[in-house]
Amino acid sequence: MAYSERDYGGDFGWQPSLEEVDLPLSETTFVVIDLETTGGSPRDSKITEIGAVKIRGGEIVGEFQTLVNPDSPIPPFITVLTGITDAMVVAAPKIGEALFSLFEFIGSPIETVLVAHNAPFDIGFLKSAAQSLELPWPKYQVLDTARISRYALSRDEVINFKLQTLANFFGSSTNPDHRALSDARATVDVFHGILERFGSLGVFTLSDLKNYSNRVTDSQRRKRHFADGLPASPGVYIFRDEQNEPLYVGTTRNLKNRVKSYFTAAETRRRIHDMISLATKLDHIETQTILEAEVSELRLIAQFKPRFNRRSRFPARAIAAKLTHDDFPRMSQVRGLHLLERSDSWLGPFSSRDEAALAIEAIYEVFPIRQCTSRITLKSMRTASPCALLDINKCGAPCIGLQSTETYSSISSEVANAIENDARIVHGKLHERMRDLSLHERFEDAALVRNRAGAFAKGAARSQRIRSLTEIKEFIAARKNGNEWEIFLIQSGRLITSLVTKSSPRGLIEEIRKRSEKLAPSDKSLPASTHEEVELILRFLYNNQIEILFTSEPWQSPVFGGEYLRSKLDENRFKSESLGYKEDFSNSFELSRRK
Image 1 (cartoon, rainbow, N blue to C red):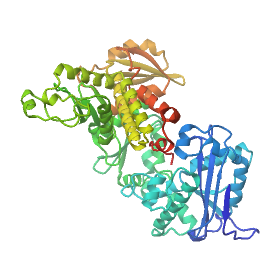
Image 2: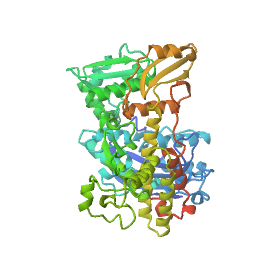
Image 3: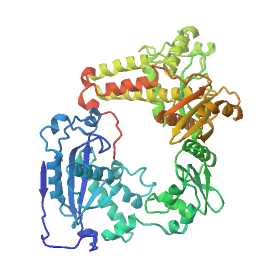
Image 4: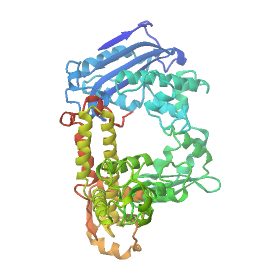
């Protein structure tokens, strides 16, 4: 445990609390806290490290750091993320001792304000630990830099409000690296940067800061009546401007409560404040179920493209990677999944062209198909020259006639099979390639191969899931919700209707089928809806206790497809000993952080 403080000032007599005396921010003592934990919830996870920095008047006056023995194994992915191992915490203090020392460092809630990035996470763990020890939680005032940064910065300045992004923006001298003290130091720099921004807005005292970050704008106050008369049921709401153009489309399980929240201090997004200032009207569409509401939201966003919605405005721009239908097929990127035919072998959708390129490179690693883009004909073969891929056995050079269409088609059929059905050959060859590279200490190259495998696995898993539903012409499912049944009719991946009934859903199957519209046959991979709608429906079906009432075709996915490859990659990620990886290679994997 490391504990140091260079300024113990103050006396031990009575003094008024910070809430009673409105101190200037320059005279307020703040303690910036960060935790590392074994997971994301205090219900089933424990603290492994605590870091804290005490600041006053823009200067650091003390630091606190300790590892904590969680009395349970640290999950491998947490070790990869933080570098904290079971061996490191064996001799560390238990949470009771660590918490007592932390409280001593922080001092009285009368004179200290806590600061954290995503404060509900850190403070939630600390409160849970105190409760488990039957210790009263001191009534500290808490500031959340993730929250208040939304008032200081716009999306034009930062793409998100993660700690790493903000630390880069404010030029922090410490890089957040998933260790508690480093992250706390970075948060100090972010906090100081935010306070400088607020200074130009007339925010000089603690109460100024609290009022500013909890303010309700004049537009919000004037337009609270938008929520009047709304039902407490699922649905879609649409904010409109004075020309009746949609500004923003949203969905919710409870229309009344959700719309009311836009006119309270809980709404901190600057773009939403800007939207509300322009809104003159709110429309709503009540739906039978939340799935119907979410699907309606997607369709309305795609139709109107409201300027304050960020996602789902342009589903036709999604990127896929497909095998072409030439005499000598090759991989190609396409924008717009709606253009794909049912007979196409394709991967995706991908979040970017770079990700799609990685998936295609995975195929090039495994299969000797051509990488050139020119059309191969008998005439072109007379003047073409082979590229270097022929010399390294990565291509059989059909461009100069060294491969017949029959020989080449056997290879392209293997590619199509790997994309659509069986990824085991991709896993086997890329796994072997990563192992060989790591044994030769070429860890960056091995990491690149793994990123290619990951992109291929992601694209294959998504395309196979989409096909699994779109190939079913008619699908009826039901979900028990309290005393009622929710019934959903889906055709070729499109939600046709949903209804709520207290009757047995099986007695309504034939009636639903007779009364529903019938979609026209189509040869497209997405015959009736966007990929976003299909994936939304799939998430709903997977994440709820669904009873399948009827399917015109089997609902099935390949056993050894993209999900199989993803599971193998996750399984191998932490088997560094068996694969021969060194620690620096394992740590090169990109992992999402909680901050």
